[in-house]
Length: 422
Image 1 (tube, rainbow, N blue to C red):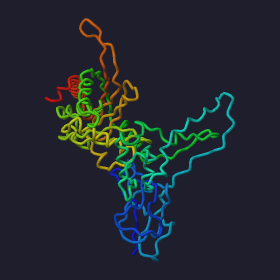
Image 2: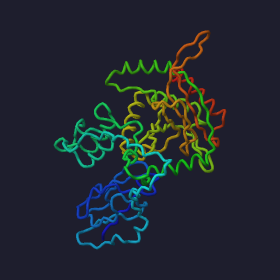
Image 3: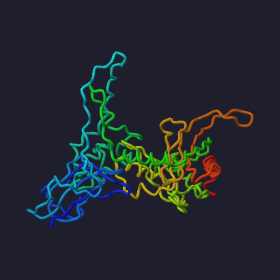
């Protein structure tokens, strides 16, 4: 009897998936565990695998279609076996992605200025056709901005495969990395001659919309802001990076902040908590969510047991996770389970901002730029590197004084890095 291939829940919060690409086609032989298709979930692009041996008899869902979890997307069986057609009632809920709108432009009123020129196209990744690489590796490289000529292939005959590109994206010394906040391709491709363009929501953008509505509305946020002298932290970072040399990897300010936040949470367990329906869960472990901008949204890879890890370990892990986040290759266990989060926009010259809490967590800190400022020191004015940091608190879990005491400890650690050793 033929076996149904269902759209599986490939992430803990997945309700539907968009079938990006079939890697097997009708008539192909498949084995259990082989990849049948690539599916865009609410967090990443995952592989849908076969659960039976045989031939791929029927593909029920074309590429680009969004399908609810549980729907049948294909059939696997023996040659000649009869299967249900594409008109099956099971497929009624499948939603093909709508094509971008291209209406005829209406005459513009005299008060409306002429359309601005389209932005210059972004430089594409190096031509991958001259490099021996799998189709999947080429696609990932194009999306991630990785030059395949700089990637060492580990496949047969030196062929570049998926894991080589992922490794290259995570290590900028060997391959190009996408920018910290990539602009969606749909925004860059501004069609000429039309007043607007409708772009379907991606799965991750749908999830962001749902989670923000579930956070900023029901959760009673309040915000605490402090300014921190980062002079000693900057000196410590410079000394550590000099000691590590070129081969040891660099320690970033973000790594230092993650470590300090984790250690402060150990001392202030009341902030290391989840709000549940009828109880508050206070965590004995510290897992820090690290906000990473990707092409069409935001994802928070998790540095687990951050309080137990060295700055060097945190730096290496954060770089690897950020690289794979931007190529949409994180595993579900790598972006779930944070007990507290850190969001850093300092690299964009943002002085101060407030971040939205990621439920069920009870808090998140928003990091601004480190800026040289003139500040009083006894009877003189000196220039010091300063940082503004804002903590968003869930008032159902964290009271004002509780959050303030936590921030005081965090400030002490960052202003005197030796305090992290106590």
